[in-house]
Image (cartoon, rainbow, N blue to C red; front, side, top):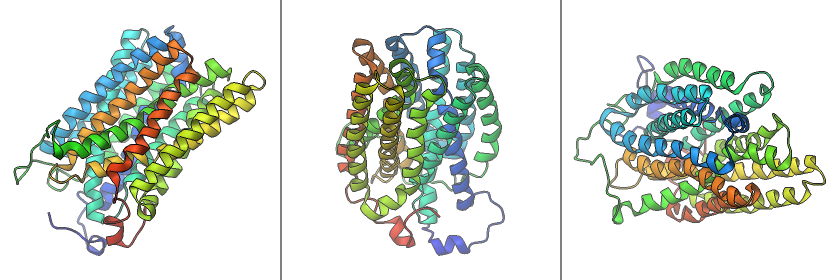
Length: 426
C-alpha cells in the first residue's frame, strides 16, 4: 500500500466518508468509548450481583474464569478472521455479541446463567478489541500520527461514564434494569459507529498478496517479542481487571463503605486512566514507550500498595479517611496503568514478519485472558487470606508490566510523530 503523508491526506478530497481515514479515526474513538461502557457496565453492580447469588469471594472468583475463557477464544479466532475478512466485518459481527452477553448477565438469577453471560461478554469484547486495535494501526499509518493511546483513553472515558452512572442510579434502578438499559442503548449506537471503518481492501487485513501467514508459531525467535509484550499486557490488565471487579467489594465488605460510594474506587481509577491515556501519545513521543511504561507502572504500583495498607490500618478509626486514602491510591494506579496496554498493542502491530492483526491478536489473547483470569486469582487468594492482602497480587503484576517494557525500548519517540511533526492527538 502506498504510504500517505499527512499533507496528502489532509489535502485529499473524498467523495464520501467511507474509507476516509479521518472518519475511521472518529469511528474508532466512538467504538472504544462504547466498549468501555458495555464491558464495565456491571462493575458498580458487582457487589449486589454477588450478594444476590450468595457467592463467596472464592466462588465469585471462579465464576470470573468464564470471562477469561470467552476472551481467550474470541481473541484467538478474531485475529485470523480479521486477516481474512477485514477488521470492519469482524467488528460488525462482534458488536452484537458483547451487548448480548450483558443482557444475559442482567437477567441472571443463577450462577450458571451468570457464567454464560460473562463468557459471551468476554468473547464479544476481545473480538471487538482485536479488530479495532488492528484498524487503529492502519489509521495511524494513513494519518501519520499517533492515536493509539487516545483510542484507549476513549475506552476509559466510557468505563468511567458507565461506572459513575451505575453508582448514581444504584438506589433507583436494579442491577437487572441498569444493565439491560445499557445493553439496548449500546446495540443502537454500535451500528452508526462502525459504519465508517475502513473496509478490508483498505485496512491491510483482508487476505494476503505476499504469502503472509494468518497465524504465527508459539515458539521461536520470531515470536519472542510477542511473548514479552504479552507478559507486559497481562501485568497491566490483571491490575485493571482486579481494580474493576474487586474495588467495590473491597470498599463495601472490608471498609464498610455504603452502596453507591463503593463505586468511587474504580471511578477514580477509570478517571485517572482517561487523563493518562489522552496524554499518553505525547508521553510516548517525548520520553519513549519504554521510559513511560517503566516509570508509570512501577511507580504507581508502589503508591497503590501503600494506600491499601494505610487505609486498612486506619479503617477501624475512620471509614471516611480510609475511603479517601483508597480513592487516592486507585487514582494513582489508574494513571500508571493507562498508557501501558496501548503501548504493548501498538508495538505488537509492528513486529517485523508478523501481520499486525495476528500480532495484536496474540498479545491480546494473553493480555485479555489475564484481564479476566487475574481477578479470579485475586478472589482465590482473598478466600485464603483477606481481600486487602489479595490485592498485593494485581499490584505486583502491574510492576511486572513495567519490567516487561524492555520489549518497547527505542519505540515511541520516533516514527509516526516525527514524520508528522506532531506529538499527540489531533
